[in-house]
Length: 74
Image (cartoon, rainbow, N blue to C red; front, side, top):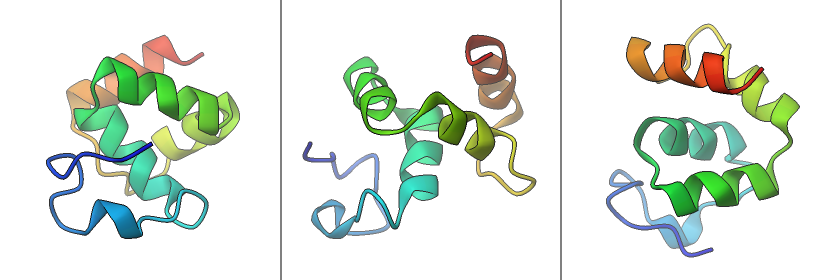
């Protein structure tokens, strides 16, 4: 998948490594992702990895996004 620049405004989306930068990608998609990007995330990362990222102490998510995804990912 080619990531859109507005989702990764602080870096070159073409240089993002999906394994090495998994936390970064998951955080951005959970906070700002479109439905197709959320679908891509669930195809490429296990629910366990997404849930673990969601509950990291310094995750970059707004309280509203964290609450929503906590309810949706059980």
